[in-house]
Length: 97
View 1 (cartoon, rainbow, N blue to C red):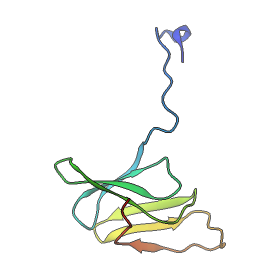
View 2 (cartoon, rainbow, N blue to C red):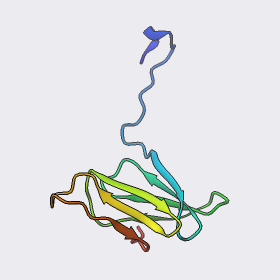
View 3 (spheres, rainbow, N blue to C red):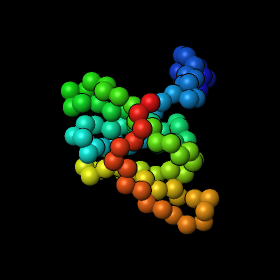
């Protein structure tokens, strides 16, 4: 966008800005915010007061990971797995970065 569209400035957002694509209360009672710009599930974990506690990253990389944050753990699966069939994972203790 530029000034020609009625705006007096150009807006060029950073293409790799860490955006949040999923939020949920995890098994530890904290808020898990999944970033959408990584090939592996990557979460910022906050306490309920908004303080960043740590990051959690899962070791497998794929462009098609889907996750669901639940009180019993994080469900994870690939939409397009290389094996040709899907596996459902219940992740309770992701490795921290």
